[in-house]
Amino acid sequence: MKLILTHEVDGLGSPGDVVEVKDGYGRNYLLPRGFAIKWTRGAQKQIDSIRRARAAREIRSLDEAKQIAEQLGSLKVRLNQRAGDNGRLFGSVTSTDVAEAVKAAGGPEVDKRRIQIRNPIKSVGDYTVEIRLHPEVNVSLPIEVVGV
Image (cartoon, rainbow, N blue to C red; front, side, top):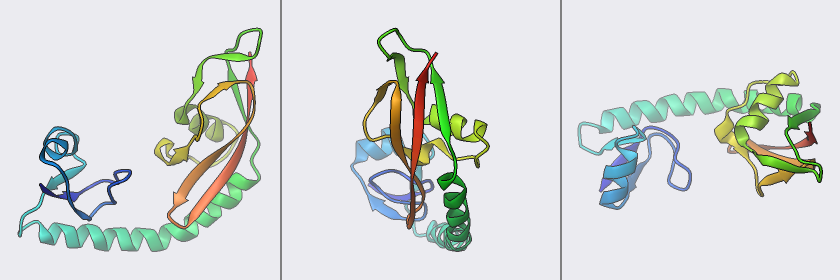
């Protein structure tokens, strides 16, 4: 099935890309969630407009990403999570928790989908998470998880 992506999909592509996927994946996941539209000759105009918008946004966002990276570099992020006596958390730290902690620490608003947590954080301590601000700009953000 040939589709046009309207949103960024990990491992598949970015908005405006024409991709070939299996019928079930397209019909049951991408199309119902609005991540893609069916490819037609008439949709080619929409592809062009998405690509133009993406190009303009990327040029602007590269400078913004560098500014945000500087802000994040000087930030001390502390997460207060419920934990047991042995330092083990009740649950784990999610990318949503990290995004809220960055905002609470006085940092810029970061999209939770841009935050990459390599290994699950299930105990108190110091950790590092990756934030993909732009395809060319990645930031390693140190966070401190504290049990309450």
